[in-house]
Length: 471
Ligand code: ARG
Image (cartoon, rainbow, N blue to C red; front, side):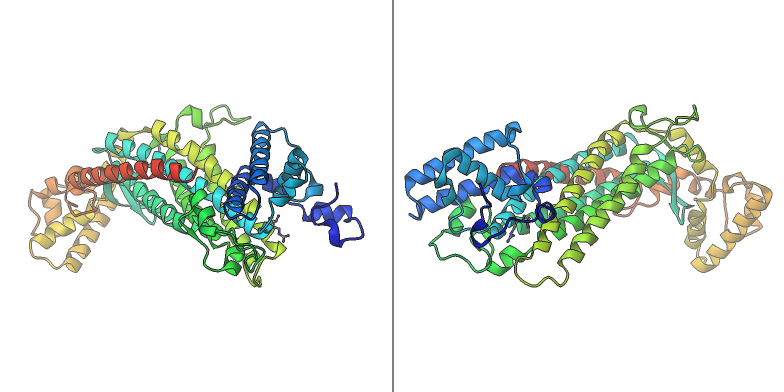
């Protein structure tokens, strides 16, 4: 059979053009959503009396059979039929005969492809919220198991102040919590129906867009037909949220890589998540976090790619927009791969509490606290800073830490010191002194964990509700 749009043409399409313009190689990913959309469309055509009921029933039964074949992988898609929409339509016509040609009444591939993408992406967004929820749960478990584990906190990658390892884990729980919120919010803009916009201007048939929307569980329909077929903001938004998620994963990856080094030795990733070297027998490499860090680059690239495709595109549909798909598919696959591994990798990671403690005992991360002690005695903070700076310099020259100094040594720097400073300098004391909302003191961290757990419960409920809504 010739092309579905062949009437106006007298010559055959050049073979290379056919290959160059086809999208079936990648948009076959949308097959199920394409059929889902067609079923709702044709049901509406029947309800509105645009097609006779018998034709509608024939077409629906045919689409169901095509769907089964798609699921079983026994449809051979061809480049000659260009894209998923025409491949499915062709398969339908092969199945039910020429009545299948009535399906495309009052519809264009422009509003059709947009609808497919909305349907496809909303499912993925719910799955990603679920994956982020699982990662948060793994981080929360590590936090609970390490509510007394103290390690140096860093700024400029220099030891700054001691913190609870639980507090560090909970920072990532907050980050992924924002990611979850962003995805949940974006659902509002994904869950809007373009179908009914036609090619760009609407259609002459008396269709019922709101009926199609409710069949497909869309909350709204696009207000403007030109916008409906031209809008790819929802994909950009997703790619942008994905970039932020990958950035968060990449920062955590970097820390895991660093912490796994002999120099830090703060954590050990489970053997199941590491690989070896083909030459150096002693090596255990953190390949998973390294690859996640590396693959973050392609996710950013996909975002920039689509921004650039859309820049300067006049309304309405332009073939350029076919370029919206591969980047989106790639980002979804890349992020699925990363998140799928991250939750179990975090859950099975061994935390080297003793080594962290040893690090805290051998640093000056308690210096702020004796400065604060002097402030408590009435010394202006700026002056206290100077005094402690000199004390630390003395320690470095003497090869000592603050807790090694005698009270007499302390008193050389200020008469205000007394023997209570030995308590003030203890890492537990230093940590627990930061007892402000959101701080690292143990009671604060335990409350943060409790709040995160109830937020996670709400996320789990959201996932159940929205899985239902998007299927
Ligand atoms: N394969 C096309 C795409 O992905 C579908 C829409 C084609 N529309 C058209 N007028 N050629 O963008």
